[in-house]
Image (cartoon, rainbow, N blue to C red):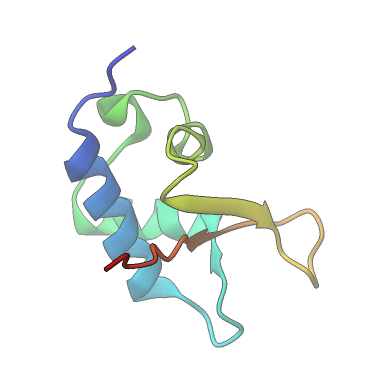
Length: 87
């Protein structure tokens, strides 16, 4: 199944993660959803091919790493997977 606007979705999520990254280096999934909604009311998961932002993020395993916060085990957080440049 082709996801709508893959590059746009990746850019929106990447920008949100970078903007709200906490001092400990983590971006909490709940904060990402709240940030996106504040930026643009159209930033809702159903407009990007999923029921939740978590489901959408899971569609991009080469771009984002979803895990549980080390100090808050029930809190999902997300990181950008850094791509290595091959020369």
